[in-house]
Length: 95
Image 1 (tube, rainbow, N blue to C red):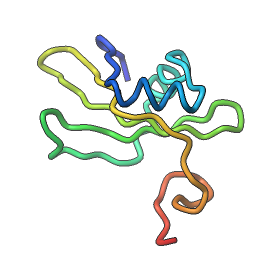
Image 2: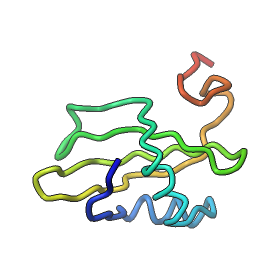
Image 3: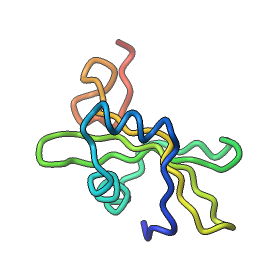
Image 4: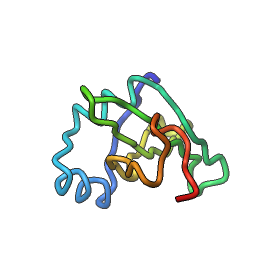
């Protein structure tokens, strides 16, 4: 995905600090453009869940896309829980 202006929500900044995730890591996930879920009805902008691997560490980034404004807003960033996600971290489990 070609990044437009990248903005971070306050929530994303707090979660990144708690989880020791930096902006470069988030950009790497977004640059990989590996969308695993889409949320076209999210408001005010449609959003996407991206998966990236930083070494052996999986990382999920949820970002909203304001195409008209040329902005991508990072909503949250987290390391997926192996109980809630399958071994590939691409599909949610029922557990």
